[in-house]
Length: 184
Image (cartoon, rainbow, N blue to C red; front, top):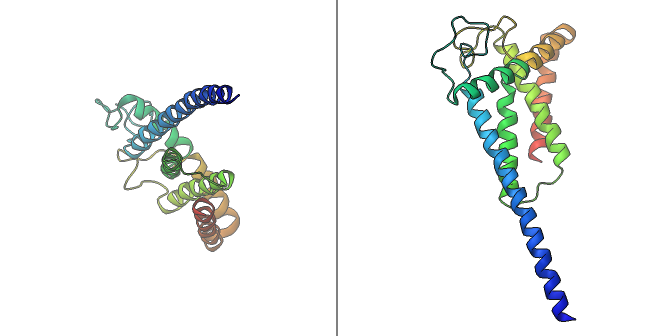
């Protein structure tokens, strides 16, 4: 009887270790993708293809991650805006913590906090530097403005309905609630 138990436990440990290896490998690939996208967005230049806002486009590509990085960064910055840096950094840290073997509690609340920080970051960026910023869009400004579609839409909505003071209050509260939910 004892011999059967040890054989079963060995079989279970082999199957659980192979599942664990796949889990670690997939999380490692996700972490690598987050690092790649983070540095792609950080080195975003509006003059890199596939941008149609500058002609001729940069040759060679100015993005630190090459043409693939320029492609990803263009669409991330177009739709999400600079708040994507917060998302990529947060997801990367969550993956590192999980790979280190620590359990992440209340993942849903942490993701909601991260989404709030992304929206607040892009909206704040748009409201502070609506046309041309000092860090992104070095070759010029996109016609819509900075902040991506997310930041522009939220910024215009808040300014239209809450004026300057109400917008500032909502953004400060969004930053605080997002930080509390993410770091709780």
